[in-house]
Length: 256
Figure 1 (cartoon, rainbow, N blue to C red):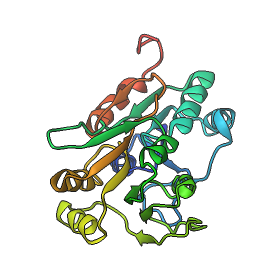
Figure 2: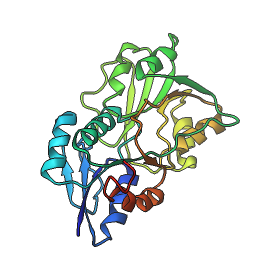
Figure 3: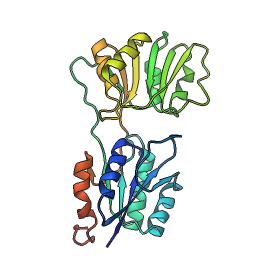
């Protein structure tokens, strides 16, 4: 018997998990991407690109595709998608498990200012001009237009379009992680950065900027993670892969 698994992806771990599970002959894995990245890395498994139309739309897809297990392996800040996934799983009775990488922990030498939202991060920068590295998604940097006195260094996988409407110079870099600490340190120094604005994404691919800021004594404005639905979860690809067989059992055997 072949079990159908839908992975909501967009992260490195989602791609790794899809590859690991697709090696099993008893599983048919489909990876879903929201489509926010113009040229995503090749996923190696059948891939669906685009939204579902909210929780109801995802529920319809789960029924029509006869999905046996839904895996939420989206970005830690994709709160709406995670909420839609939990809603759809509840509506259809399809088991759900989430892959949630641990967040970064503040350590000795870190100068973190914790905020709740991107809007709060803009306010924290203050009135005096600063040189800020915005380590955020390209959809989020527009919030900084209300603070045009700062110089912004913006790095993204895809071009920021439209560019920020600010009079001061803004530098745009196109790059995809992982990044090395030595390179991140050189980047911060060469641009005279005095503050980094970041989400607490967790993982190793983009942690180098946090380590580099620590080494240089640079402030990091860290946006806290959103509250996500309370569903079964695992922190690593390996641990979630080991849980799959349990969630493919009939509900009675899972104690549901």
